[in-house]
Image (tube, rainbow, N blue to C red):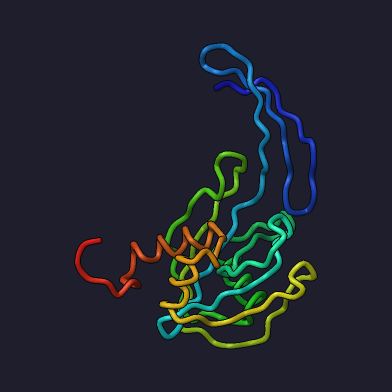
Length: 183
């Protein structure tokens, strides 16, 4: 595909939306709407064979959602995603990590957004007080044993795709399932 033109149609402090006119390989014209957002960081706070999750209201879904802590800076700040991960963990949960490990990254929704997400495993956790943004009013935090977390995944209580992708990456790199034998 060849981009013919691009124009920004919307911008706020978290994202921009652009419309691109393109030409397909066969020569036919096309159009793409793209949401541009900075790379996010997601943190898996692991403690005592369980996970700390946050629950917040997700406006686009019109419901609350249990998730691993995650986010982006609301400005053009230039830092590493590891620094962002540590900040998100502290901001949303009050926890600080004695050890943080980069597990990988993924494209959040490549059909419409350029955003990627880096996944971090946080261990050796120390409790503190959260310092949430105004958009995070009503956010809750709780620790769930791994078995309960997996039950929530199976039953559709956890619907956040980033949380699901991060857990899959963790399971592939660490023995968190407790299962033996073939699948």
